[in-house]
Amino acid sequence: AVYYRAKAHLNRRLNLTDEVVKDAKKGLKLLEKSNLDPDSEYHLNYLLYAVYSKWKNIAKMDEYIRASEKNALQSGNKNNLANAYNGISSTFLAKFNKEKNRKYTDSSYGYLQKSFALHRSFPGKVSSSTFAITCVNLANYFLEQSNKDFSTRKSEAFQYLQLTESEIENNAADPDLLVNIYGIKSDFAAQENNWAEAEELLLTGLKKIKTSKNPSLESQYNIYKRLAEIALKRNDFKTALNHQNDAENILKKSFDQKQIFNAQKLEIQYETEKKDQEIKNRKTQNYLYLAIMVASLFGLIFMFSTYHFRLKYSIEREKKIQQESCGRRR
Image (cartoon, rainbow, N blue to C red; front, side):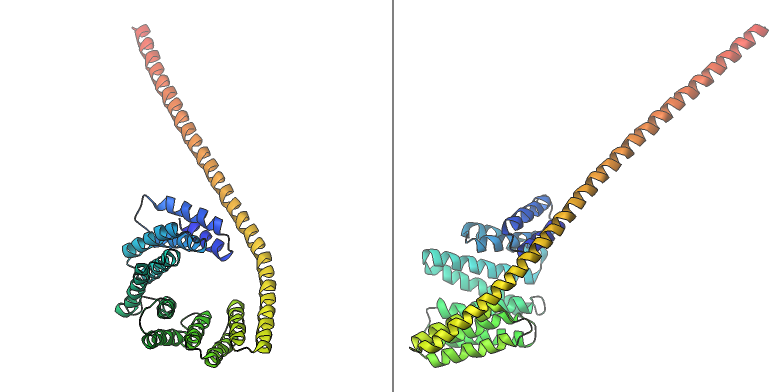
């Protein structure tokens, strides 16, 4: 089961979603009759949730994230439980986007609060990365879903964003979250029709992303696209064109990176399949050795039985000869 869990994680990194589903389900099948490893069950169920989330299959998302929650409660792992609460929140949000029913946004917010509370109640048990994601999601709730007045929404959102930024500055959370932080701040400025501030915030975020340890091309592309939209709102067509060109250049770099990644992916797939075949061959070898051992054991038992029979026959024969010999003497 652990093997299939590791393989599913690898296939997720390689974006082989069909393989993720196959491996995760194989792992779960091996664990279904045992409650000895809820941690592995959590990861396998969470991997399935992630795939179905990507495929926008809400029913399956709900099924596997609820299973993940159950596993996290069984294992007592607070970080896994916080991630499960975030996943349940996302599932409710997906339901809201489909049905536009406000009750789903209330449930989504409630689970984010449960995730946030875990970090506060169990210091050191919930990772900074998980906590930062929770804070970004809460800030986004106040940007897009909350029905409170604008001032309250902005104040609440900025408090959560400050917590996220602190985690990033302490090198405890993913710098890619910077695009969310400055994107949300920029969107609040845009809601006030303050386009200059909206642009300035995005440029600040872009600068921070570019100077981070592993600058994300996807994050840079998204910011350039948003900058182009803002420039159009300001009727600054020249700046909009420049930002659009920057976005296209980033897209080209991203495409080149993906080509390299695809080549590496093929090599990794080849090596993985080769290892799988080695494992299968080893299993076949083990079965063969076992068969030989069993056959040898039966052979030894047969030889021992035959020897024992012959020995017994020899003893009986010798006794009989002795008796006959004694009879003749008389």
